[in-house]
View 1 (cartoon, rainbow, N blue to C red):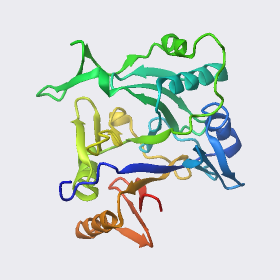
View 2: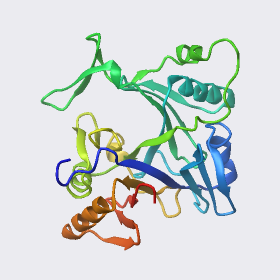
View 3: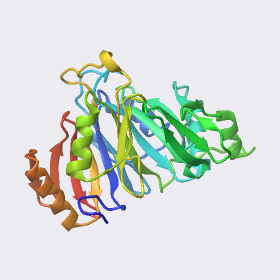
View 4: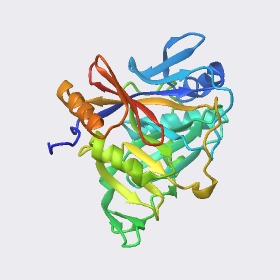
Length: 299
């Protein structure tokens, strides 16, 4: 591994979100998306799949997150089979919730929000469909499929075709598959170039798309290129979330080893970035205030 870069096995752990009403949020996260409730009390609900915690909902937000607020755009839960994505689509369709679906060529995605305005993506990765990614000198991005056709990456997803993967039995799995995982987190940003200096130069992620023309910047690892993303699609309409708003509380980055955690800690200190070490956890925030915790996998 290149010095200063995070290991390819780096992954995202639980994402903590603020909500205005936990029971209302569970109507989406549990009843429609199919996450299991692992623990619940008046203050929070821990949700997961296969016994692993993926999402933690924290009560206490006073107002929903505006769709023009700098904060969470969506958290993405990745399914490991297209059939699992089809079950999620069937649950969304039956729920009556408003949702959308897009074909990104490198993935197929379903989008919905909880009642607090927290964006959610259910995603199935399809990297085998991509031949190459072309970026023009002006920063425009075109995705070239294996058949040579060009794609924008934001075409509508053929949901009826997806649902045909379920066959004619009419059976829909009520729960998310146990091997689902947090694949990426996507936020709205003011100054993505500054954020990338932190995520690349300090934390040690690798760059992926860095395009102001396209309006998106993201980074990841050698194994998973798209893990933390920022968009500037709201442009001048972007506003700071008001005090007490729902949205991201913090997310978790799970590192490969104690040595890697210590190395990130040294880079944070060298960059004069405020961070707190508490046993096996480093808590810090990026330049726009998005909070995160770095831990060693298995802790």
